[in-house]
Amino acid sequence: MSTTKRPKAKPSAPDPTTDKCRASAVNLRAGDWDLLQWVAKARAKRQGGRPSVSAVLTTLIDASRKALQAEAATVVNPYD
Image (cartoon, rainbow, N blue to C red; front, side, top):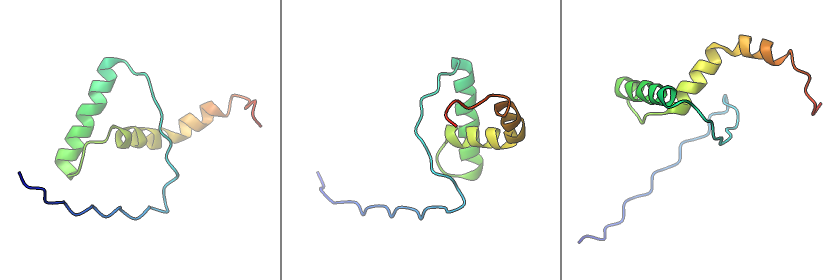
């Protein structure tokens, strides 16, 4: 058995145009999760790279941002 060490991958440079990320757990219906995974796999196949459900969700949020912000504006933030 070979014990050759692989070279470490260089970390990619941070993108200054993006916000910081937060890890989260979201409960979704199984069918919705499956759909997100299939879309992520289709994008990875078409564009290359790894499947990313997070990227799919980010695209959906960006496309609906104005409506989401309008809905959020109807609630008084108790932390202000």
